[in-house]
Image 1 (cartoon, one colour):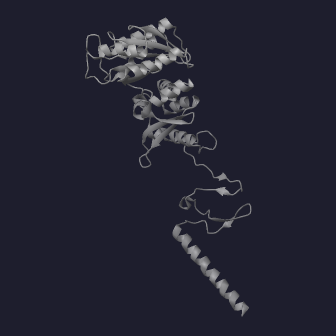
Image 2 (cartoon, rainbow, N blue to C red; image 1 turned 45 degrees about the horizontal axis):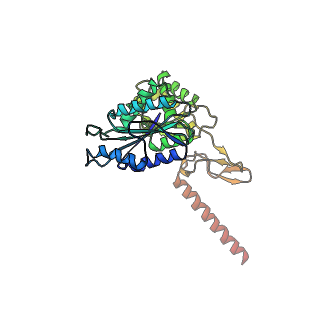
Image 3 (cartoon, rainbow, N blue to C red; image 1 turned 60 degrees about the horizontal axis):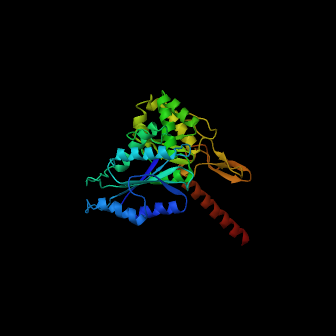
Length: 350
């Protein structure tokens, strides 16, 4: 169950919206403790109680509760679910209206409630989204529904954009898929190699942040279906410092397998298999010439060649230590020879 909460100050606007759905035949009331009437008259009834707290600006609770495509509740069950939800938030002595809409593929209801209780006290909206998620977790179990989010202390909740995308597409959010799959890999792994193998078996590519000076792993990210999430954005449980508390990790021993995993994730591993730190050969270009590093200072020794036709023909320098300074000397020597040839040509023409 996914809940969207809005705390507002205008009863009429939200009532008019839901009443329009009723007139269009795609909405109806499944529960209420106020008299059903026009939007204006129901607004007046809500405002009678609201006047008990005239200084309260935002007195309107508007919630939509949305079922995954795989779940279903009939009107009676959904009304009971909605009432349990309101009681959990502290709205056990408040005015409310509960509409069911049928204009989307996923089943959902809208709840409008007055934050001012019949006693005149106000229901707090402090941390209401977090409290809402915790209540929904418990109600999902009670009503046998699909569990959307587990322990909120170790898993990050969905963002508003992720919720809206889920409602629009009906697909389970990638964040939840990763939390489930990575959590299983952590619990089933004994060491780093097994952890990486289990992730790759579920089409998840880990990417390790490695210090170039110390070789220490400082973080981890996960790529799935073209989307990359940092471990920490999935929840504390999925940060690297937390993961290594559950698996056997040794920096020196596991460095080759971690480097290999990074190569595969970045697409630089030619065979698709781990090479455990071995070097990767140059890729042939379409013109069949060798493709080396873009930075000339990273070229291997003795491989400065002149390209003609199909490939390299003869080194321009000897198989000795190459430096930029040596290349400057060679260029200078070539320029001097070129000048001498030009002088000879001019002398021959005279």
